[in-house]
Length: 226
Image (cartoon, rainbow, N blue to C red; front, side, top):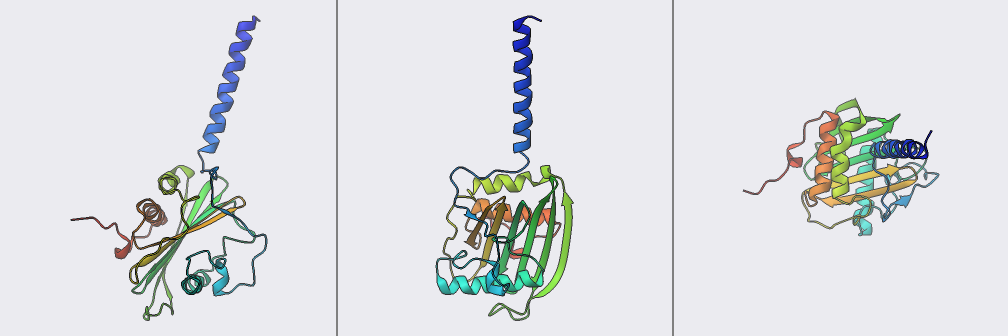
């Protein structure tokens, strides 16, 4: 065999390997080089409403952070969902927590298993929305989806710089809280926004709800300017 032939065969092998690596990498986004992710804690504290999130991980105000952690914790407890920031968990997962001012709440979680994804959702209602509490599970949904179907959500998270954007942006007194959690390998991130204030992260949240098979709550639908 001539040397030129050997070189051409070797080059084809390198290109094939590069293609396989690139295809594998597209299955799910890796943590960016510039990341504000925290390291997943090996052990979780004793489970309570407040321990589903680390202290100070949801807002910059200590009182508001404790209140939001407690409200989210009640919802997660009723959904029998584990914390994502600590303990044993999936290699990759994303979770939306959506809490409206007037008696509606939603949790949607996507877990990756063996290359595919399981998306499950729990929708809540309450007769006592002020203060939040007394949540009742109204409906549940679950779907198993191929990895390719998740691509729109990942694109929205990437456009919103999920792994590096500010973890909290302040808002008003009424509206909705939107929190998206992400866990990938040993990295964890939670990003909280007020109402529909972040176009890309809001789109990621809506996409996740649609993937679960649930209808978007009216307050969650995109607000269009007249």
